[in-house]
Length: 449
Ligand SMILES: [Ca+2]
Image (cartoon, rainbow, N blue to C red; front, side, top):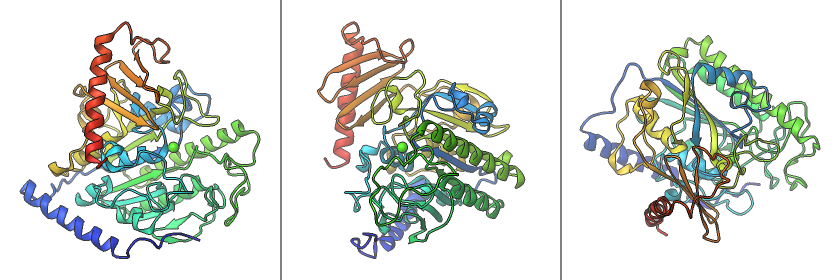
């Protein structure tokens, strides 16, 4: 039932050779081996799927999420953190590579229907590969969504272990994707496993933490929740392998209620992971990051923001984000503007891994912001999706529609982007348009367009 036979079998071997070559350049370039720090923190990265800025209790949302709220209370809660993309795959490409997703050519969703030979190129350097160079054991449990072919498998991108699904969403019970393919993997093998998706991710996370408590690890938990199909722990499977589902969002008609149950399961997963860290004595040396890959869909809430998933209004890409590390990260709130792609350089710095210059990252290291409360250097940030574009500098946001109309907003007093200042502020408009043009040329030339 899979279509994973197009790539030559030697891709993983090539990947290893390439990794060796990069490692060699790394040593020569840095003139040293990767720094061996006795205090490499464990990194737990929890990525919710399609969770809106206004969903969580700690963001003023309607859903009860006491465990995620506790993380926010004990850690640093970001109010201006953004996903690189307005949909799943692009944000994940930026997260994995520390660069704008346009550079790796992942600008849209890798759909289950038409793109079975697309994925994140093995030549890209991922945060998992970076951390492995720093002596970390790495795992991903949950959603990959960066390629279906076996050659694109996360185990070829720096992850020692992978359990989960390759597509954008599966039935939470039967793990069948929205095109009718069975989609639950152990590494490169399609091996079914019984259980509710959120709970399976939790189970493997807790096991992995216990197994690796004596060595530095990176645990990446890209949850399916709270993406459709809207199913709770109590619901039976809606999808069956070999049959294209009639309704991809599931059979429940009370989707708001189902969404609430999915949010609860995700919150309880966070509780289990935090308990596992405590039980294994790891809380003092573990950084936990919680965030989302794009804005809300279906019953999800964007709070005070305009727009939802798939748009470049703030609601499409401003997401919840929490950084937790007791005694290292001071509890509080940060209004610094950050993006998903900033996590790779941050992880590298905390892990003591010197990055090769030729990586040319777009993301910046957030460690001084996290650990010392320092502000970030001034920068202009960019989004592009489906013909729409946006740029951001300080409070100013430029939005360019598919038709080419340019709108300017000052988010400091207009978070909902209602008051277009394009005519009143021509100099600011021109400045952002020029910056957007330069960025477009940069990413398009590097991706070979
Ligand atoms: Ca998503």
